[in-house]
Each structure stands twice: as structure tokens, then as C-alpha cells.
Image (cartoon, rainbow, N blue to C red):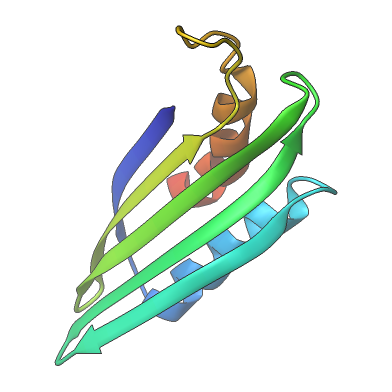
Amino acid sequence: MAKYEKKVYGNFEEILTKIHNAVMEGSASASYEDGSDFAQGDFQCAVRVYERYSWTGGNRVSLSLTLAGSRGEYFLSAITSGGSQGVFFKFNTMGEEAFLETISDVVGSL
């Protein structure tokens, strides 16, 4: 498991779209699995789940994104899972870390 968290600023829908595009364009095997949206008053929350094939791990890796907040200030949490090998201990998590890298440049510019 690898995790990336950051406070981001801007328009909620634009942030979500930029991150979605970065994930989908970052790998030929990337797929959007499902998502959920919630809004109440000024508060907005979006959850997105993606998958892609990890060549380094020889398996599929998932990426769960949560973007939540209001009035142009949001918290992003991105967590990957499934890219390690081993029965009792996790090793070879390069695929998970590489999946997070697909969004780090976009998020860093927000």
C-alpha cells in the first residue's frame, strides 16, 4: 500500500477532472471502476476507484481517491493497493508507487 495526501485549492469539478484524466492517460491499462459523489450545502465529496496492470509486479493495482471539502479548499487522499507480492509479507510495491506518480505532477500544480 502506498498513500499520497495533500490539501488542494480551486474548483472542485476541475480538480477532479484533471486527476481523472491524469490517471486514465497515465497507463494504457488504466480503467475507471466506480465512483460516488456526495454534496450537502457547500461541502462536496467524491470517491473514485481505478485499476491498472502493473508490469513490474505482474498483477493489477487499484487506486482509491477521495476529494472532500468546500469553498475552494479540499483534501485529497489517494491510496493504492494490490501491487505487492508475497503470502505473509509485502514486497515489490513498485507498481503501487508508480500508480500514485501518475497524479503527483497534476496535484502538485494545483
